[in-house]
Structure formats: C-alpha cells, structure tokens
Image 1: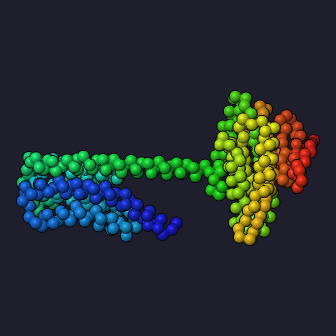
Image 2 (image 1 turned 60 degrees about the horizontal axis):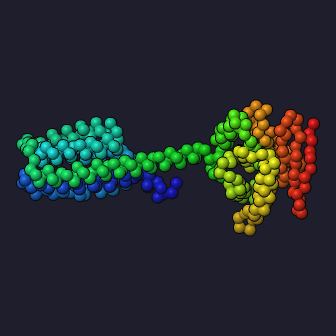
Image 3 (image 1 turned 135 degrees about the horizontal axis):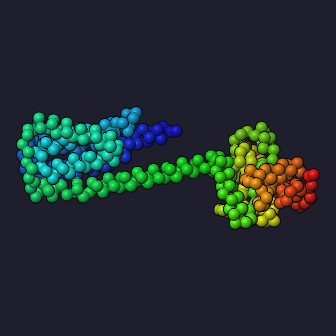
Length: 373
C-alpha cells in the first residue's frame, strides 16, 4: 500500500464527516444569531461560538489527520460537539425550537456515525454540557421564540437532514460497491481475472444439473499450456505469468459470455460450453489452439510462443457427476499430451475410452484416431 493510500485510510472517517459537520455547524450558527441578539449576549460569547461554528470542524479534521485512529478520534470529536451543543442550549436560555432542533441534529449525527453506543454517550455529553452552560450563563429559561428565531431555524431544519441523507446514501453506495468487489475477488483468480477453481466448480455443477434436468448439450474442455515449467525455468516467473495472462485473454476474447471459464490451477484452465455439441466444440478447440500458438509473448528482448493441449468431454446422461465429467476431460487432455502436445483429444460419449486426436503441423492440420483398450 502506498503512502497516499495509508493516509487516506488513516483519515477516512474524519474526511467522511467533515462536510456534514461543517454544513451542520454553519446552519446552527445561523439559528444562534437572532437568539444571541435578542438575549444581548456579550462579545466574548459571540466570538467563542463564532470560532466554534466556523473553525472547529476544520480543526477537528486536521487533528484527525495526524492521529493513528481516525474512527476513534472522529467519534471523540462528535462527543465534543454534543457537549458544546448542551452549552449552546444554555447560552440561548433554552429557546425551545432552536434547542430542540440542535439537540436532535447532534443526536442524528451521532447515531448515523456510531449507532446506539455513540448516541448514548452523546446524550450524556449533551446533558453535561447543559449543566456546564447553566453554571456559566445561569438558569433563566425563555421557552418562547420570536418569529426571527423560528425563521433562522428553518435552514437547519430543512437542509441538514438532506445533507445527512445524502451522506448516508453515498456511504451505503460505497459499501455496496465494496461488497460487489469483494464478491468478485472471492470468485476470480487474481492473475487472470477468470473464475477461480472453487467458483468455477460451483458454476460447472449448475450447468451439469441444468443439462441433466433439461437434457441439454454441453461440453467441458480442459486446456493446459505445454512445457510451462520450461518457460518458467528459462525465462522466469514474470514471463510465465505473462503467458498465463495472455492465454486467459485469448479465452475471454474468443468464447461467449455464457461460457464458464476458470483457471483450474497453475497453467491449467477449464471451460464449460453450454448448448454446444461435441462437433462444434472441435472447431472451438482448434481455433483456440491456433490463436494461442500464434501469440507472441515476452518482455524486452524476450519473445516466447507457447502451445496448448486440450481435452474435450461431452456431457452425457450416464455421467455420475461433475467430477466424472472433469475426469473424462482430464483423461482426454492426458492423451493429447501423449499424442505430442499442441492438439486436442475427445473423450468418448459411451463406455470405453476411444479418443480422437487432432494435431497441427506447420503446413496443415492432421487427424488420426487413437484407441486405448
């Protein structure tokens, strides 16, 4: 993780609440102005609360940026807000409408940022602030509000809930996107972006059951990069990773969206082709083999060309499950390897193993039938 990413994670919570705190305190300041004017508060009260409304949110943000635990510090700052809210209520001589709105908005901020635990602690801090404010300003409650004070409260009453709602929506959207990303990461292989083995097998089971239930066609292909160990030993693992990535790119480009492509492990790939007959799968396998062999892969002066071997197994009703389907394709792949590599072989649809192999030479493709007793 880079230094910039560490810093963003470090101040993440403070950054998220900075805007809502700034808007909320400015709106609260607007509500305080006519109340303080009518009460003829001294200059030091105006300066103290003016500094709190205008300076404190930015000071809290900077404070959190140098602290190791942004969440903890940010929640502590919200408790400071709750305490100052109580003092402000006492300073306004408990004007009913602005006091109720201010305390409600602070409580809303706390519960949206820390749930019931932070809400409860914030409520205690509000009460303590009221006691502290009463000790400073005295107990002279004025429950009646003038029209000016009521009008000054309207911006906070109308705008601040919308700001909190927008903040909550953006946060929920971000969480949803992160969940989708984590779900994708749990299903895909980090190097290729294809399905990983676990999720590929789940999808293969679904397709197997669909074919079994609806008597549909499907083909499973096992694909293995030839002499991959030699590539790693000769050119290094970086080039080997490039080869795997390039093969996966060819598979993604050439196959359909409904085809189930996965990295089975190492240099081996598995593909389920729904609604495809074995005759059609031969054309697909041959096209993949030719395209992969034509790819030029490398770094700098290194230029590597690789070939692949493929094993094809058609879905049939006599298969006992996905494992047997995979085993049939794997056996066909093993025969393709024995047949000289850079070719494909087809597992039988009936009992007994009669594999059909096809291998391309430099001039043209050449077919031959193989039989294993």
